[in-house]
Every structure is written in C-alpha cells, then in structure tokens.
Image (cartoon, rainbow, N blue to C red; front, side, top):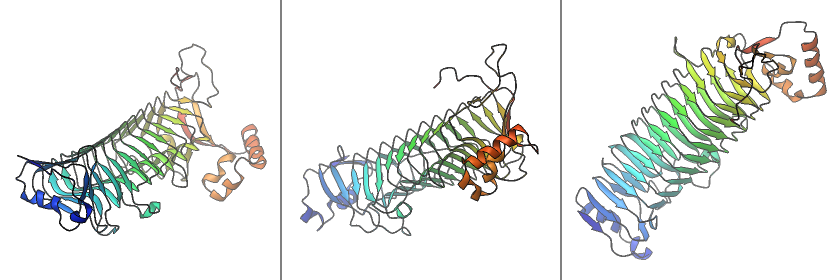
Length: 406
C-alpha cells in the first residue's frame, strides 16, 4: 500500500500539527510514504514496517531542538533521500538525527543529516544498512560533538559510502560481523573506533585530517584492507592503532603524513596468536611503527617503509620487541647490497636505538631532537660505541626496491 503526501505543508501549519506523524500512524504496515519537497515537523516515531522516501533530500524533517528527530522502533523500516536536521544537544539522552533501537533489517540511505548532536545511533540493531549518507554535527568544539555513526551491540550490518564531516567519532562497540566500507571522514576525532568487537571487515575507507584514523581496542579476528589514513596529527595522532588485539590482518593500507603510522600496544593479546601486517605503505610519518608495552608476535611482511623520521620505536623497557617478525619489507634507509640481483638484500636490515633516540625513555630530551649536540653524540655512538645499541627490528630479507609501486 502506498501513501502519498501530496502538498508542501507551510511552516505555520506544520508546527501546529504533525501531519507526518499522523501519516505514519495511519499508514498500514509496509506502506510507502513519498514526501514532496517541504519542511515536516520532526521528533517522529516509526513503530511499524514502513518506507519513507524524501525525493532527492528536498523533503526536510526538522526537529524542535530537543531530543531525537527520527526514532525507529520497528524492524523492516527504510528511510531514504531525506534531509534530517536540528536535534537536541543533550549527550546523556543521546540526542540524534536518527535513532534505531532493537530492530533488524533497517535501511538508512542517501540522507543528509545536519545540525544534529549524534548522527545515526544504532543500539541492538542487526542485518541493517547505513549507506550513502552525509553527516555533520552541531557547531561545537571537537570533544562536545556527538558521534556521526554509533553501533552498540549491533551485528552483521553494512556501513558503506557515508561522508562524515566535522563530527566527533565513528564508534563500533560490542558489535561483530559488520562490513565498514568506502566511507570518508575528515576533521573528526576518531575516524573509526572499535572496542570489544570481533570479525568485522574494514575496507577501502578514506580518513583525512582527523586526530586518529582507525583504533582497534580489546578486539580480535578483524580484517582491515585498502584503507587510506592521512594527516592524523597532534599528540594523539596515529593512522592505525592496535591495543590488546589478536588475530588481525592489516593489508594494503596506506598511512601517510601521520604523527604515528601504526601504533601497537600489547598486541597480539591472546597467547599463541599473531597479527599479520602485510603490503601496507607507511609513508612520511613522524614514526612509522610505534611499539608500546609487551607487543610481540606481529608479522610484518612486504610493507613499504619510506620517508619517515623514525621507522621503528619502542617506548617501553625490556619488552622483547625483537620477537616481532619482519620479512621482505622495503626500508628506505637500508645500506646493504644485492650481489646476485634477486631483489633481496644480502645482509639483514637492522633498526637500532642509538643516542638520537634517548627521548624514547625521557621525553624531555626530545626538545633537543635534531640539534647539533645530539647529532654529534649519535655520530660518536655509531663510530666508536661504548655500549651495544638496542636492536628494535631485524628484517633478514629486506627488499632492495619497491618495484615501481610509488
């Protein structure tokens, strides 16, 4: 059954009576509501299977600035091609553009969600799809904005081709089996933040000018492919982070112009597991790979490590960092030869901790980083070392070239 609201409702009439809510209440389950261009009173509730189509985002559902603009409390609901705006600003209520709770098979497609605290909030939502939406938060400072997309105990969803600008975080917490693909975000805090999750796939996303690219925490069995993280700067800036994470595959990602390209903290966490870090590009970062705490049994293979100020650092004492496995990586500071021309260096590439890395254990020393004094001390330490330098990484078969990849 199809319901059609035929006329644009004037604002004066609109705020006197919520015609859209009445149409929803009167429609039979499974109906289609097509909204002509106009402004419709928000803070609506959808509690039955329904399709609402706004025709090229010219139909606007506008909240009253208090609470959530659209609440979905039923499975098999689709809302698409709408502009949704002007939610409340209360964090404790999770005021949002769209809120979905305890529902399955919901679709939110091609909507423009603006002037909202939280964008799309999914709580206990499964087998649903959020795709092609534009989301931006209220004009608050970074920490006071809401999250653009939030998954909470929500499994087996597809989050695809959304564009997120000047929001706070994109959160996936206690949620499993989700596909997060081809999204774009900029000028946010966490482009993508996972906690207590498993078996998610993160692929072909692009995240620029955010504080943090992708941070995985207390999670396992996840794959991240083909993502580009650029310009994650500042004291918390990093491309991809792993904390207490096990059985991960990071493959074909690019971390470029970040404070830290890849940050690894106590990962893998589960005994007898590995993290596989392959075919990634770590380019022009302040620190390409930064280890913290006990982080061993990571396998680095066929990565390109080029143009970074520091290739490998470890800021924790006695953490057996050399128990990570490096093989067939390209290092732009490798100084060996390839006599037989097989493309593999004849001697291992070794990353060492010399005097120029004293700041790792005493951050105050970093004030003198690159100064003539540290440069001279470092030169003397390499020329006539008084003690054995600390080894950070050993690649027994380093690649001599990148084969025209860059």
